[in-house]
Image 1 (cartoon, rainbow, N blue to C red):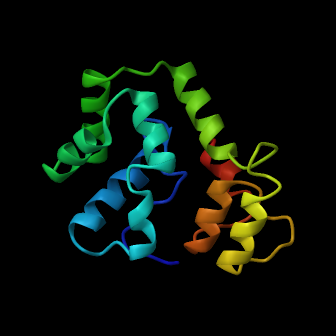
Image 2 (tube, rainbow, N blue to C red):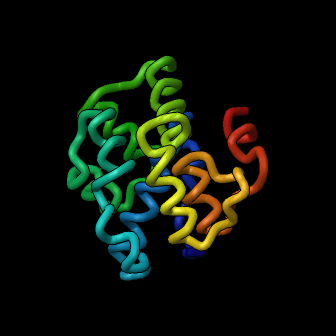
Length: 150
């Protein structure tokens, strides 16, 4: 579902995938512009994993975002109040997040079910959760992941 103002999974904040997307969803939800389909997963799923990895609470991040801080400023707040990530920890996070659904417990059931639910082509191009999201929201293109890692 194409949603104006929502950022993509591969957009980086200080090298970290997904963080900008979480912040954009918080802003859109606050403005009443986030479609209902996204509401149940706010603070859950990848949002929750991101918060736990940074060792900060989702509601605390939400307060920082809604105070008017930029994504980079909110991430710096997370580093100061949770934990600062090393370059290797950013690599580990990005690798896990961008490959979720590929050769793991979501491969055989979740990914095929979501492809069907979203009405996406079942032609082997969607391998990960990030692929599902990017394709569903109209940003996906072949080798998108490769460009994101540059």
